[in-house]
Image 1 (cartoon, rainbow, N blue to C red):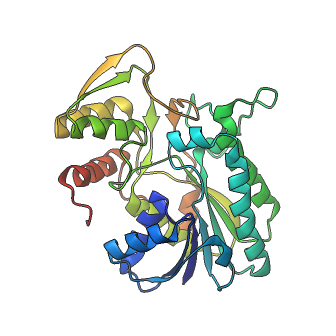
Image 2: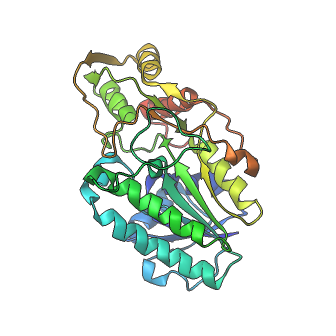
Length: 311
């Protein structure tokens, strides 16, 4: 299976490549703006199932069975910094993949979308009947990312004869995550590592973190499925409340925190009280998550705190 990965320097892409490293079934073609960075990383990790590490100008010169597009902003800080340019970036690399699968319709295209495609209001979790909420008469900067993902998904649904799966990621956490990325969980881990007090708001939020092993399973299930044009929401065995995260991290890792009345969290796309999905269409592909959100967070936090990055 020959897999082309766009945005191969993104952390979630590297986690996927690392997860698949023991499989002789996959051969990867990695595309990035910094190929040398990738070469250094694959050497450090002992990644063996790589055929090419390339600049984007070489994309399409080989034959691929699957294209996975990870290009985009991976954390709130990057989303904020990219601003409106996220539209052009998303469109450019998406069009590259579409041009290829039009010439080779048997090729599967997996696009990394986001739960943010639903909009910025998550007073309740979304489900299969949910609709996207777009403030069409009052666009605000924090919605550029959401709109870019929604627009890409709309384009893909118009290409119903092509094998395209949009994979909406709500929350993902790995021990390889940059702890300066300003997610709630990375702020928590930073406080544990540096033995500082975490000041956090009294907001009541629920999140659903997919673990790298379940994400890898999801990708495998989609690759092994019959051709279709669809969208799939990612999910774990069960979501977790912020209060549960704080209590567990305090009990297991000695987190110290104080709750304050004002909002302390940084979220470039809105706070989203219930940012998770009840849409279980992934079951149609045979996906069955193995870990709850809290179990995954604990496993990956233990790896960070013990500096064991090879498990």
